[in-house]
Image (cartoon, rainbow, N blue to C red; front, top):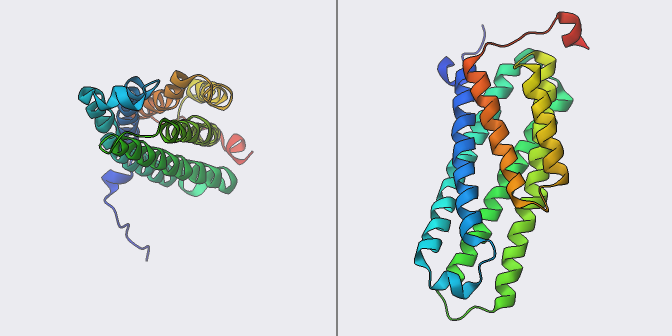
Length: 220
């Protein structure tokens, strides 16, 4: 007898993956925009006297855990949807890069929260502040975004193999991954490409049916 699933079927559907992806993308977009606008090029003194900017950063940071939860659910449902035709190589890269991405943005959020906590103490050494800011920026811009690029490449490849979404969405994802690999470290706003592409992908999954390729193509 087959073992019954631990989760209800409704939580394992394409619609569930799409909703989780949309929630993740919207939350991360808002969080990134809020923190980028309030924190970049700001020095400790200007933030210490500007409570509105500090509250803006805190709001963005509070959204990050919920974005991470939605993203992990998105990964789980997508893997469940791939099912028996899952390619072990690409699915391992897909899972590993996705989990590393979540871990890195969580660490970045913790360091940003630590920088904010320094503002409630006696005057902060500017060198400590700059070190923390640059560390967080490098962690997100270089490492997290590279993992996001690898995740995008693996999702696009898996999607093409199993016909999970239209081919043009996959090709758009390849372009997004190229941008994340080459430009995200130097151009901060290009980092929004990743949640924007996940939002596009999730919306397409929500409103379309899977486009299954021919058996020969799937085996190849």
